[in-house]
Length: 112
Length: 311
Image (cartoon, rainbow over all chains, first blue to last red; front, side):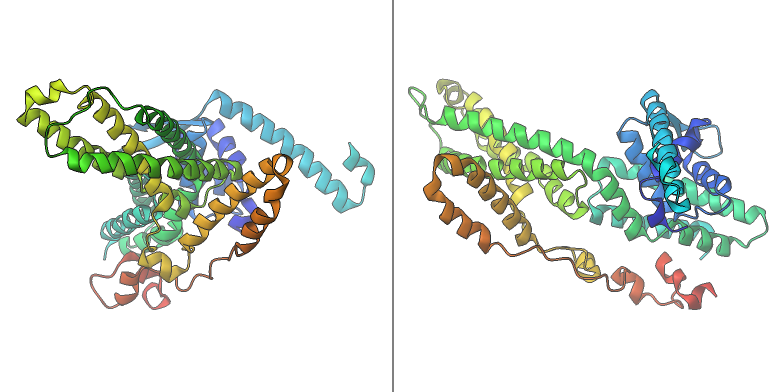
């Protein structure tokens, strides 16, 4: 799947990954690939700017961790981030139901 | 070039790209540290499954993305929040310039600066305040327009941020004569109510607005890399955008109050050329990367991307 197709969804995907527990950038990218079955094969360098933006907007928090051999930045979900994730999940559910209904030709379901 | 050396080369190139893209200095060490950690982790993981270190390094670096693209992405993603800071500073500059302008209209009683530095100071005060007033107004319009768009083009953000470092230089330049005067003639410095306190006030205000001046009016030629990749836009067009926006504001305000002004403003707005899309990217590599061939021992990481090197 190309990066362009993920535009607009990357935030929700990152928040969903971090919701399971604090993680550093590399682990987040690996988890994205694993959970998507390899479909989300993003240029890895494009995920970090999104992490920084989410942190600046208060949805993620980060700190340096010395647990590994190297110093690394660990991201965790904040309260507003959890709320934003819930909202994006609901929006995605509505959107995917509507798209599915349209693609399958069932107009009544789309109105729901 | 083995894995760690390749990562170092990538780091160096990314650092340059971050500077070119206008990512603030305070954010760069963290970005570079994260990238470094990521690449080392990737190389270690690949090496653990038996890949040679060099190949692992090349693959990790290629998967991460070209430094110029990564840096541009950082600049684009961070620009909205940086634009908010720029807006605050601009509004501060504008407010300060207004206050100073009002204060400057009232001459202080018994104003006399008994030393030679005044010859330089007075024109600076007089001209600087007026220029800064107008410029701060235009800059405020620009910053507010960028906020409205939500996403700020990274090139514009860098253009705005270039003014920040000028602040310190201007403050130093304007304060230096008075500080020197106070040191050389302590009695004279205390004798004039206009000497130190107001000079500091004026210097800060002029510095604020001089930063705004740079933010708006630094129509410097784009760096060569951007010219080569076609990502730079004509700067003059941006200025025209602002002036046109200001004219549109005046137009909408004046329509009800001064219908006679409509034809004049309309003619001015119509003169603005339509926005031009930037030309397509040409090669996407820094000049140094092109010159360094695959056979060179001092090649940059980009050279590894060529099929001849990775095959």
